[in-house]
Image (cartoon, rainbow, N blue to C red; front, side, top):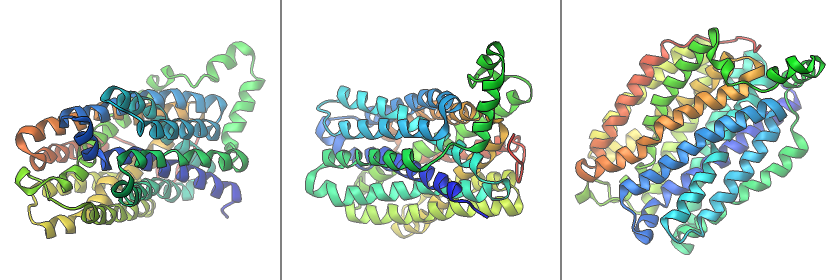
Length: 410
């Protein structure tokens, strides 16, 4: 029986993740307009994304530790407020430096949202349904991306790229409902109660969500492997999906597809529909065949599809590949959410999820810049082949992860 609080926890985390995706992806969707107005080279545009990803890693660690101290839901609300505020302020930027400051500070909230929301859902839902719940949570990234496409389509042609960012302030309103309706997980509250009963000398270290604990005993190997597989897969994802909107809009003589904003919006919505099904389906496949086996399969399929997309020159073939790209290349992140949430104990779960996921973001930070730089001489099609290799590496590393199907959280 699924309780009201379990449903609310999933709804809150999904809403935060959806709005995170919307705010973050608005930049990619208006990137070409920003480049034209602020006179940015592709490498500079990619560097701005890289800077956002680096600060996201910092935000993941900071808010992960905060989640272990003050609670999952409370920390998630702070993340939503932060990324909403600086998305809106991005629309006021008059030069690359102002835009960079906004994207850097936005990254802090963006980085913290995933770990806090994932811990909230993992600790609230029972083990037999955790895979499906985490898959559904991840699926809202695709919904947020699709929402960003709709916002761009509806706002940009009429009011320009700045107004698109102004819409990104609206997610801050979600915190009002979260504060009123969502409770902290019982397993976290029990842990905090135990900490409160311990002597001060003992409780200080236990209450801290110590980063050092992730590199001791059995957690050391889990931390290293989880961070490594996520680094490779996030490198692939950000390298590819940052540039897909620009690739679709670029003229064919420059190696792009030359699609109008309406055509590219339809293409990306089709891709995000595939991503949503990929996220949700992962949970059911993981419960049936095991989460590690499903994760490895998704990652290998992602590498193959990224390679085929880079080679495809026929518009029909590109369209046929779009939902499959979404299904596997984006849907694979359900695997990390499901497995990583079960690898670490409650005392450091927020810290661990924030660290392992966002350390991957540091590694992935070089991807948008690298792909942008390669595209200047080789074109984006060839540059996308690099992301195929990164997905393949992630798949091979994922073999070292334990299978966590049905494991009760500690």
